[in-house]
Image (cartoon, rainbow, N blue to C red; front, side, top):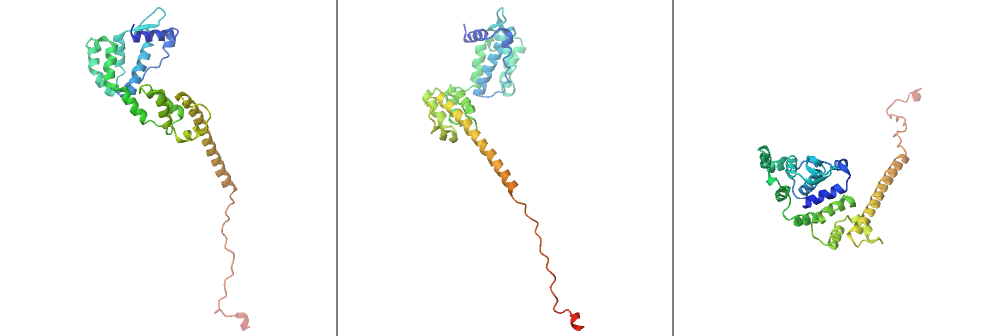
Length: 250
């Protein structure tokens, strides 16, 4: 039994009939992205194809897929190719139009050629480099952890090394609070859990300060007295020393 057939058997055992299998989301078209994106597409397509019942698979009496119709899988996956990926797939598409099955009719052969073209030759080196440049930055800790974990599984680093690397690239605001925690953070899993909780509190406190600053500004503006209009007091005109004093001549 091949690995693909084993996976299909496990999927069938975990679902009940074709309705559950149809809930699997159709993958987005593949445009020739390299590395992790290519790896993700291939995994997403495989899961989707396994859920397509008799259209793409051999099924049992309950409609559960038990093995792939590999020629149909190949035809289906070629239809997802766009842009740069479509250029790579064009010779295979031409074989289909001529009535032959490309990749020797073998899904394993398609996978091998796809991985050689679009996935990194040395996934560990690629993952290590991407992990080296991954920082929490403005991300939440759960977002940072999700990206970190996606890469970490391909690096070959020990759990202790991964824990240290995760800590090093946390935001300073999280590190400052970790210094004061009494909760266990020796393992990567514990560090992620505690850091996530701290992140929530830090962001809540930051939002509270922003609201308080807004209320203070509004109160100060309302309490400030209105500036009165400038008025100049009336000053009678000065007497002209050269004017004739009429009263004096009477």
